[in-house]
Image 1 (cartoon, rainbow, N blue to C red):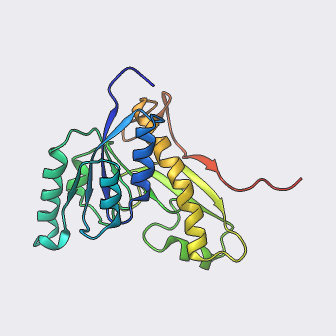
Image 2: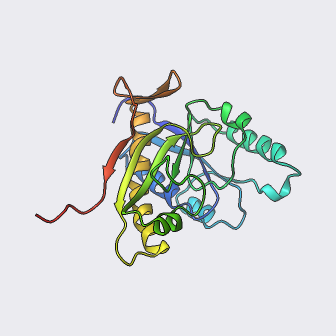
Length: 223
């Protein structure tokens, strides 16, 4: 690890928080040079809140239902983010579409993971749509967040096989297992300053990243 201070993270969740846990464990085990300063959740009953508490993480619950409109909700989110130091905002199963104004507060400082090989299958129900299309492979994409939904530049993708007999649940399980590997990896690159965002796009090891990097989790073909 480098001698400089660990990269401070704010993680936004809405559900079980499995990617949050994977990131927090990578930080705690010093596999990446980062630390989770704050976990913010928009669902009071989300299981991820208890998991964050078990890990000793600072948490805030900001329930969307408490606010008259999205602008008031986002203002509360910004106040919570400002209350703790952070250099990177990490969306980890955060199921709210953020406004362009909110995203503009964090140019090149916000990451998301989406369960598809972007630009394919933006939005919801990606596993169902992949199975319905008869695709042979699927995966997840870690990307910088921009104002357009699931459209920011992609840094790293996982690739998993779609197997005969797969259900949404079985396919989702394999994709999520790959997410727990690639998301901490990208955050680690950002902490090492191998990954930066400049001139409106990601750069990796001093070169513009014109195409996403890919980590292949498919079993090798038999000889």
